[in-house]
Length: 145
Image 1 (cartoon, rainbow, N blue to C red):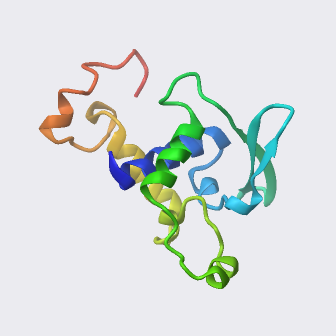
Image 2: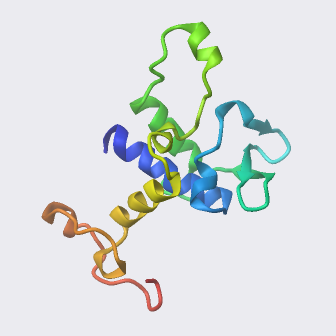
């Protein structure tokens, strides 16, 4: 729980939803998102680093609360409200969807660390505190790692 958990969940699900390289999600900007009335989803402009083109990805309502981008966005906004007080400063700054990925030189490495921290130890994930071990699945389906 908390602000750190909310942004990590947003980073993992956001990257999954754009179906791209982990570094591509780092460059999503709030101002580039548009609502699609026909499909009732948020269209996100994603910069594809390898081919130097942009694509549109749909952030949609999930089948359950763990895959719903809208709930993830709401959690992140509620737990990490914007910190810019000055309207002029806010207008001049870039409104990154994942500002935490811009505090490092390699956003894909930062996201990789986030994903590994959530992965089971058997799949190369980080060792979990004992309190979390009891919540983890005993084993994963064949070929999951």
